[in-house]
Length: 210
Image (tube, one colour):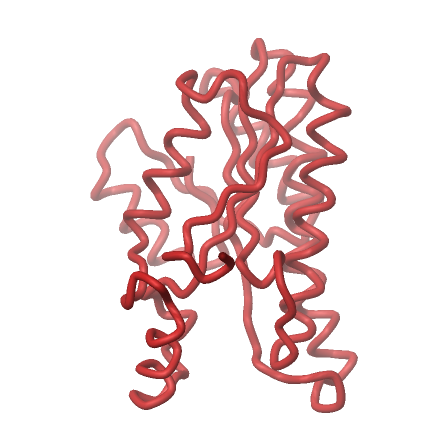
């Protein structure tokens, strides 16, 4: 099941994936929307995995960040993750347990002075993950966070060629990661192959946080 505010793109992706995929439009900061998604999942057979991947990034330091910008990051990156876990956990427990993967960032592991709002929310995701992992373990639910570094997606499209080159020069593997490389880690954590892993924070960052 795919959910997003981008209805056209989400519907197109579900169609490409075939009859085993379904798209439901919703805003991750809307609790009622999450409840509707979980109701649809229940009708479709239950919930065994959740990936909290919605995110926004607006570059800005402490003195350049408005309260409105900070609130936007909080609503999407942090509140959205909280509501996803809160609304999915009861259905997941009733479905026999499962796995939650929260997408944080390398910015949730180290200082990021040029992105204070983004950094704050990604650190929060890391903390919520650990708290939820302890709380939900008795229900057979594992909760882990992953921490991507620079990934070649539209989120970083604002970078000028020179900025991108400078960023890559800071990566030990000397390249940006791909969405597919992040997805492979997510698939592992959602699957039974990672059945004894919970509360972990795993990097997929080319060595940026070493």
